[in-house]
Length: 396
Image 1 (cartoon, rainbow, N blue to C red):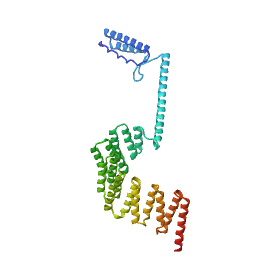
Image 2 (cartoon, rainbow, N blue to C red; image 1 turned 90 degrees about the vertical axis):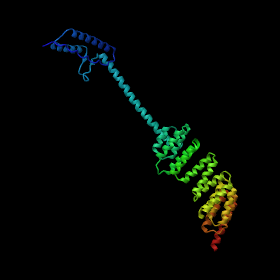
Image 3 (spheres, one colour; image 1 turned 90 degrees about the horizontal axis):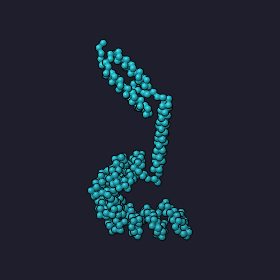
Image 4 (spheres, helix red, strand yellow; image 1 turned 180 degrees about the horizontal axis):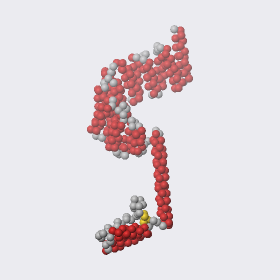
């Protein structure tokens, strides 16, 4: 058999060990292997000798406390009892650390869940408002159609001077709110119209107004736009908006009432009277009485009580048997705490030729009024009126 140059034995990968003496042993192994390789290069050996050298190499490895065929051939160091105990202690400590970390993680998860649950309970209370974007996101995930939450979220962004952020929230609200929830969508549009009026340009105001007209009740949108101009002191645009609204919805009594209220609140009673005349020209006659009543009440609540009283007096002079007008007249004087006027009105009513049912109703109201705001003499007077009325009806 011819002599061949033996191949150099492969060097096993050094294991990762923690102790310094293991590293020293590995260095010794490397040094010895280097010497063996040099010796092999100097002397030619036959195949039998090569086998013997391989066996010797394995024997040497066994003497150096290596075991093969463990973990797929990777070498593992045989450790002494003391070293094994140290390694076991380290493994036990590591296991404790893992167990501690796992328990700590569970405790943190539990605390987080409890914190979230507590926060949700707080937010469900009407007295607690969301404070962070996480609060809003959590609540809106449960109530995506709530315009109140969306508008509060917009206000939260504005409080942080994030105007564009508030706009984005408004746009997101319009996408998320169901198309059937028209009032909720209108509320968001109203908030966006107000935002643009305060922070935007005239172009951005006109754009959001145009969009609102497309998706909401146009009459409601016009009323809202006029109120926004009022709130920001833009009287010219407010008046122009209301005027255009009355032209566009000239058969609606509501638009005239809104326009009248605007001028009465500003003390322009002459203009308010002109709007009343305009309403009576355009509206159906069956609506006239109620329109005039509403006009009188606007004076009581926002203008001059005297002017309102005059309007009611004119109404009942033309409609003396309309007990509904008498009732609203009394309510208006009661709200103004003009009790002498109320007494006079009751006295006038019970002297009218009314049906028994209507007379009974007014006598009961009259008696209650005298007991609450009148005198014992007044109470006795009402009772006597009732007795006289019953006697009159009995005799007839």
